[in-house]
Image 1 (cartoon, helix red, strand yellow):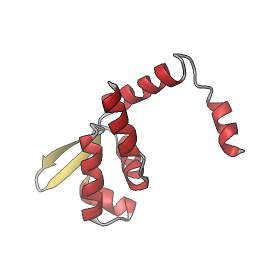
Image 2 (cartoon, rainbow, N blue to C red):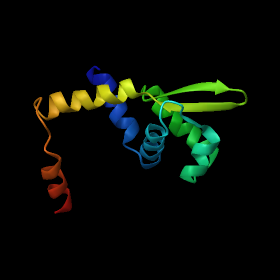
Image 3 (cartoon, one colour):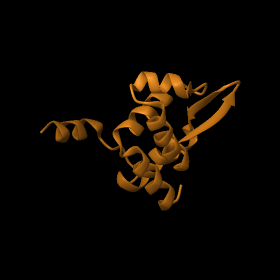
Length: 108
């Protein structure tokens, strides 16, 4: 992933509803979730969710497919792993990011 893709991905995830939607899609696995079920699970109107999913899709973090009359959204695991790899390699100097130290800093 190049810097532009990383910035787009981080920007898309830097919003509460989009981050929550992406988390649900990651948890849903490769089969994904129907847009209506996702809206119900998040408790947000379908029109708002549509906007947020478009942002995630533009960033390359989710894919969509039509199944009958439903649109199914799924997390793009390759893009997610690319983002994680970039952050690990470029922000953690290629080493472990010491999650315990991060959790301690966030708590204080």
